[in-house]
Length: 608
Image 1 (cartoon, rainbow, N blue to C red):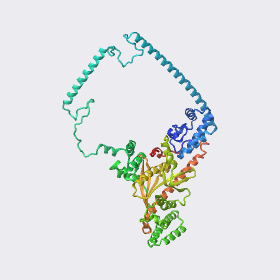
Image 2: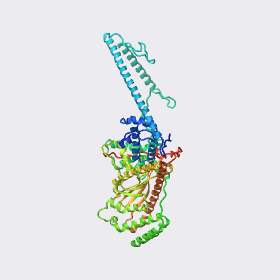
Image 3: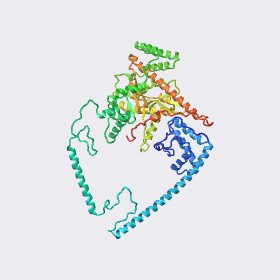
Image 4: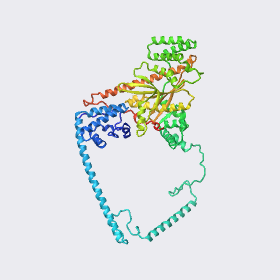
């Protein structure tokens, strides 16, 4: 018998819940079955018998299992699970395993037939017992009707801990009244004793507490001893995840009961229900009080990011461009940048020069968008696609696998997660529509992986639009990070993953990152770098921090893209490994710890 495959990068007790199969509109044959049992023919045969009555032959059952594995492999985003589905199918296709499957199917049919016979016998015995019981009851009633004064004989055996004497079980009405009167007198005496005890002085330091006594509110106020109130003490000691969950549930209950939540409260609710701690906006500050500042410093230490700076070579060119622009020689500045691009061989320096070139082109082509005295404000898409998008495209012009998607496209991972959450909804769930997405094309896995989400608003003064975009980006950034965790396999690779989000408002913006804290079981949103598109060449020097931040973003994106490519090639090697065929399997890749720490994202129900 060949060696069964091991689940690389998956916990051996991992299973797909039944709700997921319902969302996929598939038979739940493997629902709740740990992945370690997917290679056991006896388990598979029993599940097919339970879930698929139409499977009457071993061939039908075998093909049903293969079809289920193929569908799972196409629908899941987890690279480790995709790999395991493929390897299980290859294992089941081996001749000895197919023969074992056929034999196990025969045994499963025999056991099922035996089980049906036993159930039928039990059902018959139950019917007989019911008939016998009805007959005995009928006989007892007939005797009672014939002689009402005659006591009915007990047909059951007496229980040891119940009294059987006539005194303990009186039948006459006078006896029952006598017992009730005795109980009433005992209650009165006990009440008198409690009153007398309450009038006696009590030594509070030594007197034991009587179980029958209740605490008495004497109306006195507690003495202020300088300590925090109990709820504040509990808040300071409670886990962050517990506080977030409680706050989110309270706000959701208010909304369910018909209260109209403010945009700020709704943003807090969606973040809390998604297990997210948001340091970009201070809406959650009130939930933690004095802990907030210490928490922010702690998480920034846990997830550090260096301050961006221009490389020396690019810094020199940038100073020359600023000098020419201040002398109102924009044409000379453009010519200088073009010449520097042609003679330069450093990729990062070339990207930086192209960013500067694109900035100068925007001043020439789209200066009307930057005019502060124009009669009507430019549309958000004009600002996003004419000013910012060309800068973003410059970041990955030399990258084969990185690109941008525009015009409110949808992250397929987010769409699938929302579909799973509202699988039973009568309305089709719709995922977030994102203005600009940074995409990594994985050719090995034949998939597109989101790396960054961008939302734009035409005016920073529009608080409602800014707050709605921020709430959307928080959850979109979390989904980006969850997808990256599903793509990589090794622990070290997962530790380098982070979700990027960029929020734009007119000519300003903010780059932020999303992280998953293993110790606190929460996602953390941290603001990183501010962006600014200067209004004219007169203030072009203010673009330097933005230039450095965009290059810094590019370096992080390229690092994550390289790691993802390495992980996908590792998975491909495992898929094509000869070790299993030769009986010498490679060591199992242990699942990284983030997979067990991931939490679901909360999305607005389709009817809202």
